[in-house]
Image 1: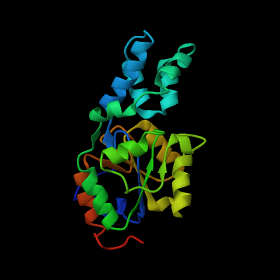
Image 2: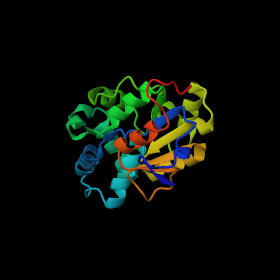
Image 3: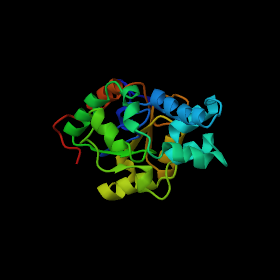
Image 4: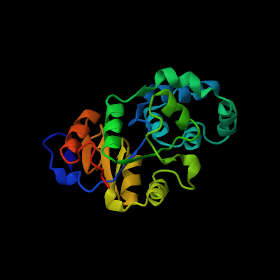
Length: 226
């Protein structure tokens, strides 16, 4: 385990060609928007507001699984009907781009890295990337709608690796939850934990400025990774 900073051992960073990002909690801070959304569902169903356990679950799972968890059994059908035509743009004011991530992405691209996303989101990802100034950096973008088995199954990571013709040791996956940890470990790629020291990770990232500074000691902008 290493903490990302300018003094860390460069062996933790060497040999990479691709960085895969989780979306919620990594590229963006969407916690407030998610809590508002799922509490709205519970209110419409006449159910109590989200418990602490429910808050953790809905923030890390697929949309459908999250609704099943907070509205089980007979409630699910009614909940799903409530959200089928929900205007997701109403939540955009409560979503923030993570500090320093845009500068990190620009540097990664200048250094020749391949960038991809593996997220539990479905149809809202393109809108979020566009609205938060993050579009154009990532290819492919794998959502839960593009796989048979969503995270923590490694299918999404494997799809990215196949598409980009990568080996396991050439990939690092940045995530912020136990679901991301399990995904990376199941896939056999390096896991970099964002702002959670309790996760089992090869590298722990406090902020994107620190990991950028650490990587700049190993890779130079303008030098191609390949």
